[in-house]
Image 1: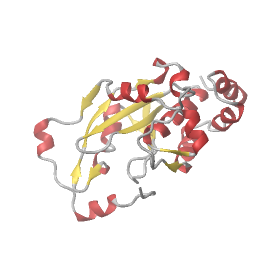
Image 2: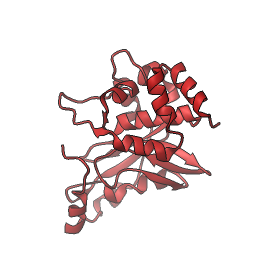
Image 3: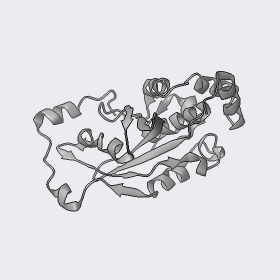
Length: 215
């Protein structure tokens, strides 16, 4: 079900957003517009320690890292009439990455906030979540190692009340992050396959240094 602008604003206020925040997200009527919005947010450098900001806190501060951008994206998708779905990807000796999922004509795409050039938006051309996760594999590196190992099933944020991730009283949503981290994950490869992965070469490592933000 797709909602018109005024219905998106009304839905946003019904889940606790201020009229201003609801209007901001209601303008993001397509996944492409949502991606442009989260890409324009500054990166969250977490200067005072790890954070997991709520949607409202991210909009207030104007910066986000991956899961915070994914929560904002999922909220905007929900307001537009799509389910608020996330997927977590886990790596070996590297950071996890969380993306917001959407579907178009039966295929999966993703909205993503990342400082890395290769871990961002995915067009809706993937038949399965495994295909989508594999599209991140060769860009998911740490020095000369390819580190991506697992991906989660799609996680519907409606498992939580909006007060737990859109407008929590303490402005953070660690319970949501921990639940997603512990949600069912699938291996992308066998242990034998992981041992045979080729190290990244010099050009690949140079390409990995192409980042929008320095932290």
